[in-house]
Image (cartoon, rainbow, N blue to C red):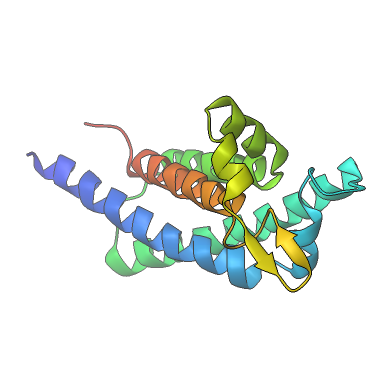
Length: 163
C-alpha cells in the first residue's frame, strides 16, 4: 500500500466515524419535533409544500451538524481534505438524506426491493396505538440503514480518488 492510499484510507475512516456521530446528533438532538413529524409525505393530510419545507430545514441543520463534526476532526487531525471532494461528499449526503426523510420515496424503494413485509410487520405499539414510523419500526430501521450506507459512500468521496 502506498502512502497516499493509506492517507485516503485513514481519511475515509475518520470521515465516516465523525459523520456517523454527527448524523445521530443531527437526527435525534438537533431535529425539532415539528420537523420530525412534518417532513413525511406519507402523513395523513400532508401538504406537500409544508412537508418539503420541514424536510429541507431538517436536512440543512443535519448537514451543518455532520459538517461541523467532519471539519472539526479534519482540523484536529490535520486531514488533507480537498474542497471539491469535500463539497461533493457533503452534497451527496444531504441529497440522499432529504430523499429518504420524505419517507414516500424510501417506502416505494423498499417495496420495490421486496422489503414490504419488513415495512408492514416491524412495528411498535405506543400509548396512542400501533406506529408505522419512528424508532422501533421497519421504516425507521430502513431509513437509518439508508443514511449510514450513504455516509460510507460520502466518506469515500470526501477522501478523494486514488492517486
